[in-house]
Image 1 (cartoon, rainbow, N blue to C red):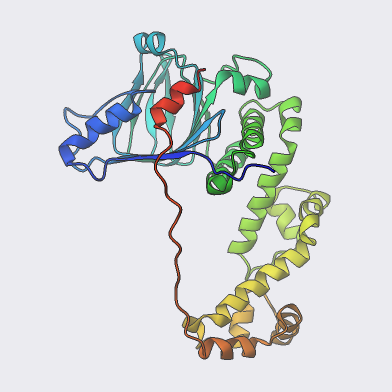
Image 2 (cartoon, rainbow, N blue to C red):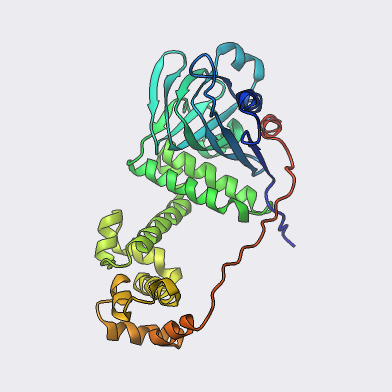
Length: 351
């Protein structure tokens, strides 16, 4: 029977420390990868930093928040620590300016993705930032890139570019799904992730073919997210194909497992309408308004399709909501002790 054990995870945070202790605690924590220093002579009094990391066996995923500071890996440090990984960083907010290889200037802004080769030098000056990072051993990356040295140091994928958007969508999805990934599934996730990195960072016929399933999965998620955010607007095949730059045949193929694109859109609209009708906060909204806000042009058509889907009329759902006291419930997460420290994990990836 496949293992259902979840991924090891660990959390580091400075918020429980006295203000004067926070930067030194952060310096010690991140020292496995970087030498850090304050921007000025002293760190700001409100400095905070945190790392939530998950271990997939062959690579690490870290969700980091940190205050302003300098990060560096100089030649003595590179020669001394022997860390031989790629560091992929998606700056969800913040950014930095700096240099890599002691001479090449670079700037990264919110939404950009950058890659550093930890076997080479760098110095950056970072703003307060929220970063999703991947630590990928060189040998693992080489299997997808097709060569051991892919010369990625200092690579930046800009927000708004096709490949930058595609990779950030994949990283967002990976981060969201980490709590549900089991140890048995981790090797497949590692392979999919490195193939996606190769397809976006060094696109070629070979790397794109390897990552075809992951690319299509991310495209489907992007369309689903757009549908969820725009249920009141036209969402026909022509609109979606134009919005996402894909053919009708591709759109139909993506949604075939979900019953087709028209069926999927209608079900999303019906579910959103059901929740709106069931919410006491919307009790003053007429049924026609709920229908219109969810993309139905006719109240009669909405009522027919609603009853066919749920076996209830919109008025039935509203009446039930009015007679039911709805409470909010929350379940405590299964939070156990950290299985390892982030620094130990980074070192162990070298084995």
